[in-house]
Length: 377
Ligand SMILES: C[S@@+](CC[C@H](N)C(=O)[O-])C[C@H]1O[C@@H](n2cnc3c(N)ncnc32)[C@H](O)[C@@H]1O
Image (cartoon, rainbow, N blue to C red; front, side, top):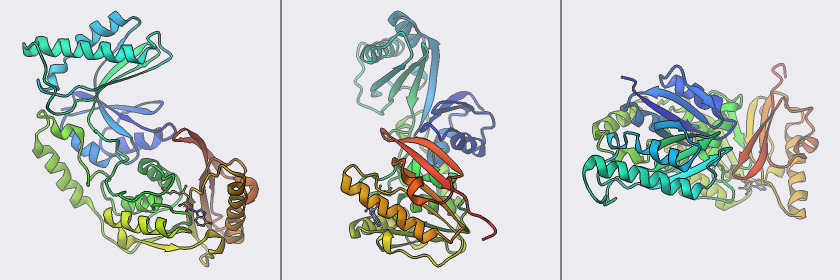
């Protein structure tokens, strides 16, 4: 029975992917706004969604939504919500708040008022003078946007980008959810060749392999709502068993990753092994300036170093020129480059990009330059 509202939170710019993913997972009418996709579901859907959402940052359970122009509104209406339906008497109750274009601007005040309202409600309903907060975590979020407060409980816990496979990091790794989105937005399909010539910890290629093998991205981790008695362990066990059964074997994949740093290559190999896709990806140490491709068709996805110093900029220009040389006569290659450097298209010099998608990578504004392959090559 579909009786709860869930909100998948995502990076700005990935809403369409998350919407399609939510539809594919069986929820036909999601409502999309900036960075959030809301849909009706049943409580029992929470495990499957957490296991399978590939591009979303976290999955929130909506407890209520109301207009709040004063702190009294916020307190009274938060207190009026049925928190005891979800939360146990020993539940831990961290509260986070954010406010955008709203009269209630003090995030700290919103946090403490919401906390007080929830605690007062639970004490009344559970007929107790104190809450030990020693049990499962129910992370509460109060998000104010245009004076409308949305009150949620976080079912995911750690962000969904934390798949569990990336035990080895390099400088500036991409979030796994973002890398998965970049792969999805590229023309690569599992029967094609994909290379990342500056692969760092291997995130793009590992996410591509997970997609190709239909491996649920959350299979190796746990989630906050696993501690909630309202969601019995059997639901999680069933969702995990179904996810394990969904894994596809099939013909070998053609995924190749290179990096100039031996430590990055070692990290990428270990991460791929952790993700269960070591056999699907070939990693090697190689400077992109010496890399040569002899295949006529393929997809290249990469995020080169962004650079901050003059010497970095010179090296980056050399990298772009190397990419241009490598691919100059290879019009059968699609090229997708994520960079904060607006000079990239000038140096890469392959006509104009067919699409430029804008994102934030952390706090840095980045562009995803996409060049289509010319099919007649
Ligand atoms: C921004 S990081 C890539 C991060 C990667 N997408 C991830 O998620 O881990 C850029 C990578 O380019 C590599 N790199 C820099 N110069 C290179 C070159 N000349 N040839 C190959 N790799 C290079 C760096 O070692 C670094 O790992």
